[in-house]
Length: 124
Image (cartoon, rainbow, N blue to C red):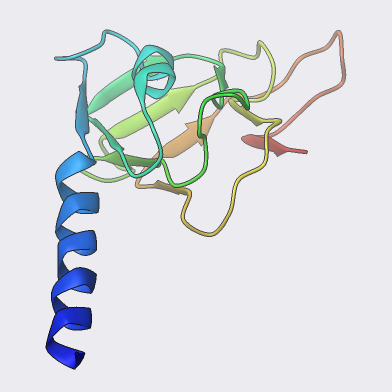
C-alpha cells in the first residue's frame, strides 16, 4: 500500500513539472507583458538581458495568476524594467501567494504625476 502511495505522489510531481512551461522574452513574446499574459500557474517567464520599457499589469484573475515566476536570465545588472515615469512599473491587483516570484531585475522610473502612484511594484 505504501509503495502505491509513493508511486501516486511521484506521478503527481512529474505531471505538474511536465505541464509547466518556460516562456522566453523576447523570443516567444516581444514584451514581458505578453509573456505574462500567456503564462499559467507554474510557468516561468524568463527574460533575456536588456532594458524593457513597460508598465506591467500582473495577469488578472480568471487566469490562474498565482505561481507564475518572472525571472531574468542574467540578473539585475543586465535586466532592467523601466516604467518611463508612466506609473508603477509592476501593478499586482489580483491575488498572488508565496509561489509567485519576481527575481533578478532592476526596476526603475516608476512614477505617474496624474495618479500620484510611485514606486517599482504596486501590490493591492
